[in-house]
Amino acid sequence: MSETTPHSNRLTMWIVIAIVAAIAVALLLPVVFGLGISADNVAEAAENYPDVAALIADGKRAEARQAYIAHRAESLIVPLRLGGEIFLRVLKMIVVPLVVASVMTGILGMGDVRKLGRPGGYTLLYYLSTTVLAVIVGLILVNIIRPGKGMQEDVPQIQTAQQKLYQHLAEETDLSDDDVAKVFGDTEYSERKNPGIGRVLENLALMLFTDNLILAAAETQLLPLIVFSIVFAGLLTTMGERVATLTRLIPEINDALLALILMIMNFAPLGIFCLVAARFGEANAEGKFLDELAKTGWYSATVLIGLGIHAFVTLSAIYWYFTRKNPWTFIAQMSQALLTAFSTASSSATLPVTMESAVDRAGVSKKSVDFVLPLGATINMDGTALYEAVAAIFIAQVTAADMSFTQQIIVAATATLAAIGAAGIPEAGLVTMIIVLTAVGLPIEYITLILAVDWLLDRFRTTVNVFGDACGAAIIDRTMPPDEPPPPGAA
Image (tube, rainbow, N blue to C red; front, side, top):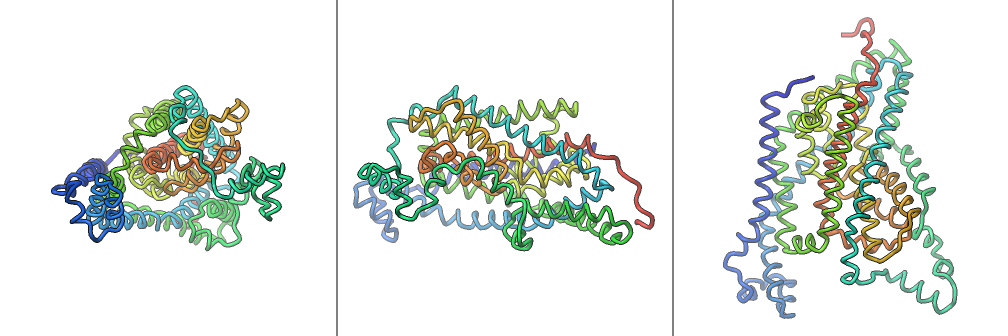
């Protein structure tokens, strides 16, 4: 196993310090920028802010003061947001070339493409199994805690104008709302209400392929890039000396990209400070975050407890069973990647750091890391699947919808499939959440109930996603074929 270097330990320490300092700054923002601003004198200081003036005109002086403090805090939040965005873009910039180079390097390192079958099958089995286990944990908890029960009286019925129109006309004409929608030429209305698992599977299959590889790279669509890389590198393994230059060049490119990651990580504490301070500071300066967190406290607690159980019990137990190594030591070795995942809320952006930590700190073989982690960052979303299952049942409880055992099974299956298709970007789970809700006929408009706290929960579920990927790489490492001697003439 590779030993952690003093430099990597110092870097982890500085990242922790950066996160703690960022949260402290975010908490102090309203205090510092609120000095000398009272509910009475805010009118004089807020002449340039129409929204503040409107609140004052409505007699809402306390809200006007909070809005004015948020405007003043923007003077600090804007440069922090810029610094964080630059760091995030630098990480994302390297994702596409790294995925292509690392997957190809992993395939080439196996020597014979036919050896891909065993580790490839185990990888898919691991990802599917852990995602299903995460969903089961989420469903058990949300049915025990029942976080949506206490919110039924406080939440108004939400409908879109389109739904109201269709349902009103349905009552007047004795037709179904689906039939009314067809009269208006809206042939996709029924499908939007309930797309079904078949359509989800169809969309997932289409996500594997693209008619424009360059466009897929530009839009960071990693699945078709991974499919192409596996097929192309597999073909190279069968061509022998005719492609000797390519088979040497691709691993060298991969090594150069990993060296670039090490250089970028030297600036990680500063970038992470900017990311966390800007996002937490913006939420805290608006003065609404703590109120919304209190309203959805049981929901947030259910998600966090579920994520904790999955990471520290389920994944840790699986890691120990297959590797016979201490999972707590492994968590410490992957700490840089986990902290970066929490800060960026993006498993794709964290991928370069995850790969570097797995190889250099956790001692996972480069072959396993190059093959397993890029695939995991794309399709292994344990935290996202758990969150979607909890959120769906939470919304059902809020709306007093009676969810049968069969419907909860549909939620579990759809959450698993939707999580596989979720992009490795911040708050991508909200997009796939629509698929889960429509699969069991729940109103998607109720997603607004969880929007205020989703950005925070997203950071925790991304961290669990990344930890699940790392555990997978360590476990699948045991199934990797042994290294073959280098071909004649190789350096």
